Image (spheres, one colour):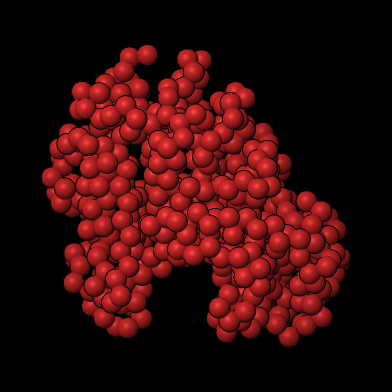
Amino acid sequence: MDPTCIPVIVGIGEVKDRPADPSSGQEPLALMAAALRRAQDDAGAALLERLDSLDVVNVVSWQYDDLPALLSQTVGARPARQRYGKVGGQTPIQFLHEAAQRIARGESEVAAVCGAEASYTATWARRNGVALNWTAGGSQASNGAWLPARNRDYLHPLARAHGITEPITVYPLYENASQAAWGQTPAQGRTESAELWTRLSQVASVNPIAWMQRAVPAAEIAAAGPANRPIAWPYPKLMVANPAVNQAAAILVTSLAVARSAGVPTDRMIYIHGGAAASEPRDWMQRDSFVHAAGQEAVLGAILRQLDGRALGPVELYSCFPIVPKMACRTLGLPDTVVPTTAGGLTFHGAPLSNYMTHGAAGVVRALRAAPDAPGLLYAQGGYLTWHHGLVLGAAPAPAETVFASVDVQAEADRRRGAAPRIADAAEGPAILETFTIVFRPDASIAFGAALLRLADGARTLARVPPEDHATLDVLMDDAVNPIGLQGHVGPGGDGLLRWQA
């Protein structure tokens, strides 16, 4: 294959900014610029001045009028193509994949993907009414700490009325349903999650970029308490992503020809073999089931076909909540002892919102440089198991028959997905529990339970379990018996929301 059309990663750069005084934290623009310069240093070649494409991962912690242009100016680059991404954990891998595709088509020679968040400092400033002396943007709040409102209009009105709109309230629906499908009690499901998460923490403990550099025992992760309060059943704090970080990462991608001419050492080059993408219906209530994600299955299935029997080396499986890597590991056929991260996971490494997988990609690159024998896998997802993207990397070119085998597997995902049930806004009578969660307040008291139900005619609806319904909540939180499939009664509540009782 023409070396001008073979995409390779040549430089990675990461930054952690954790000052003792949060007010002295650097803004995302400065963090990204530092990460790009470190990526250039890592490549050992002056590539930023040759940059023709720049993808910037969406930044939530601070708003800028034109972040790609500001960043280009800051690092002395003049890329003709500059793009700013949407919110979504899959976007770094999507951007890397698309950069590689442009290089393969001869449309680009030097590309960068980068992102940063400074939520640690921005959140502190907002809470304390402190104005930060950061680059002014279009809609900064008066205290200098800007956080955008998230528009959830695409969700069904029932989901919005019940407050099941944030990732922390939706992923537990998959966790609880899947535990039942896998024949697990809640206690067994929690144990699996905690044992997986302790392996993530062990990786983070030796990663200097990780926010929490401590190997956390599984028992500590599993046990809810003052330092590990329940968030949404069955997840306590140590099983959810930690966005309160100041971190940045950047990846430089070139053609093999450019890398050679620039003098990048051969052992620094990591080949992008190819990947796949697919998505689920954006409204989670329109999903066919909560025991699988057809988009994930299609993407990972395509990756397995692309690997064509080759053993996997380092993997980075998105880990915002345990259900995501647990489902992915089962689809990939990975062993129970797998360590599905090179960075440390979104709890322990820290979750710079949409940008975590740029760090994950840097981790896989480092791992492949150190152990080049087997290809690596990057799997990312965003939304509520909505957008899925996978990418295969290798320290050597892909076999000739699979060179840059990039595929859109949306049609396969659509075939795998069953029909979604009709949604009923009103119901009264018997109703079977399809899945559920229980949302907790910051003081660890129960705010409410949310029960996703199937009615006698097969329709789906959503109902509230109020905190005073101790009997139903006790059934839902029984560690020894999985309640999925239990029949109860649904009917109108006094506040316009349906109620479900076991």
